[in-house]
Length: 99
Image (cartoon, rainbow, N blue to C red; front, side, top):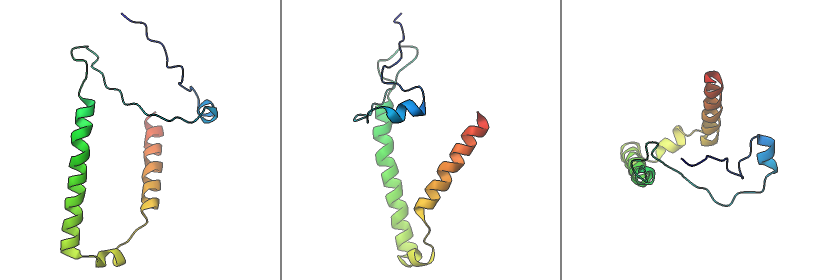
């Protein structure tokens, strides 16, 4: 069995991460713990999920456009940045509450 060693670029604290040089690449790893297959299909799932989400978002946008038209933008507009901020803070609070 191979020995597991930590990644030398891993930063154990936020202060170390802030002081580290900027990263230029991002890697996605998926593995099968039982070593039955060399790839557990994570990239395949992502390759299928991404177009499916675009298709659903496009279909919803078309239905909204056909049913209510563009006037909904004048009457029911909301700040998307504020919505994301609330969602991220809420997720952080839930994560801390579960820890």
